[in-house]
Length: 78
Image 1 (spheres, rainbow, N blue to C red):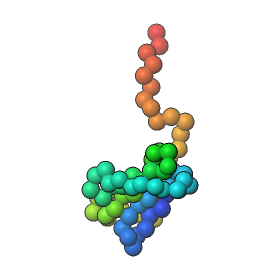
Image 2: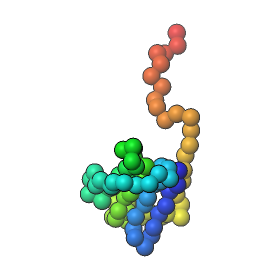
Image 3: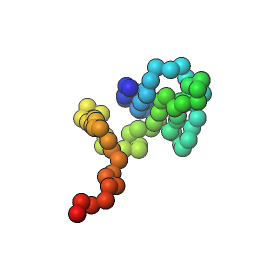
Image 4: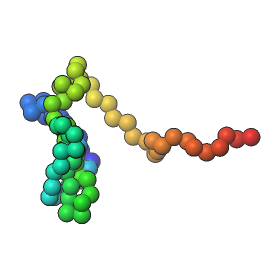
C-alpha cells in the first residue's frame, strides 16, 4: 500500500496494490475509485485536496496502524 500526495496536481492517491487499473469511476465530485480486472478497488484518488481540507500541511501527515479498527461489541464482563 502506498500513499502519494501530488502538491502540484493538488491530489492524493492511495494505491492499495500494484494491479493494473482497468476502470476508474468518479463516486463523488473529485473522488475516484480505480478497479482492476477482478473488479476490486485498487486505488482511491482525491482531487482538489486543498479545498477539501483547508490548512492541510502534507509535511505533517500521520499514519496509524493497528490490529483492528472495529469497535468492541462484546458484552460487558460480569
